[in-house]
Image 1 (cartoon, rainbow, N blue to C red):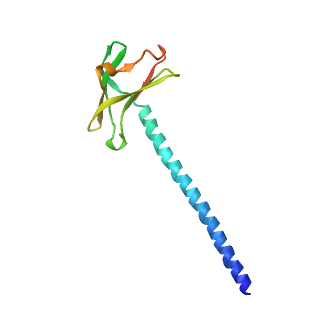
Image 2: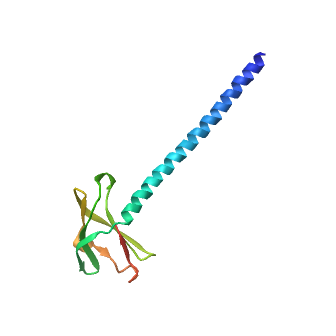
Image 3: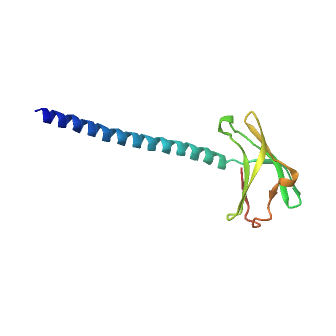
Length: 129
């Protein structure tokens, strides 16, 4: 009788451990998937926005620009970069930003450090920010 009780207690502990391990693993996976979905939703909303370019200029082989992006919340803004790509090559540039309410004002940082477009294929450029 004592051995059977010991076996039952041992079996219950093993079953509890297995169930706990499965629960912890599944709950972590669900939480990670929710975080990924939130980030994907944020990027999808940003990719559908168009920036208004107030001015642009060239200086040698560099492109300088300034403009604004509307309806940006401070909580979702970490930093802003300009990404220029031709599908194969990609160039990333830091932008100087100023958030006024929900209007994000941006510009390239220095006149001689603008976007160098010579290294990208002509007529296949795509800019995102």
